[in-house]
Length: 90
Image (tube, rainbow, N blue to C red; front, side, top):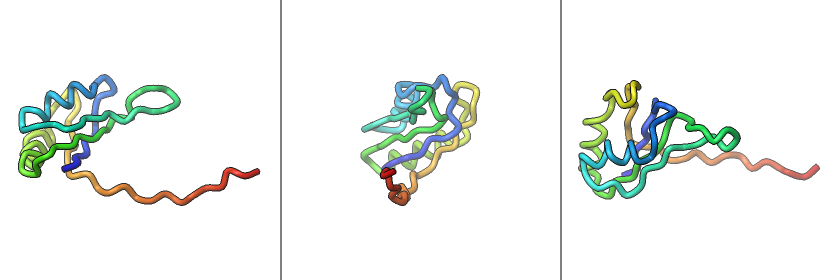
C-alpha cells in the first residue's frame, strides 16, 4: 500500500517518517520529496507498506498526529496523473 504523507516539517527526514510508520508494521520504502532547485523538502512524501492492514493502521494512527511541530495529513496515495507531453524543440 502506498501512503501519502503531507504537511511534513522541512526538517523531517526519511528516517523520521520510516520510524513513525514502522511502529505499525514493515515499511518497504519511505521518501521525502525534495525540490530539485533548492534541495529542500517540499513538505510531503510517500511511504510504502507491504501489508494493507498495516498501512491502514498507520493511516489511522498517524493522520492528524503532531510530528516535528506539524499535524500530519496521512492517507492512501492517489495514482499519479499523466502529464501532457511538452515539446522541447525550438
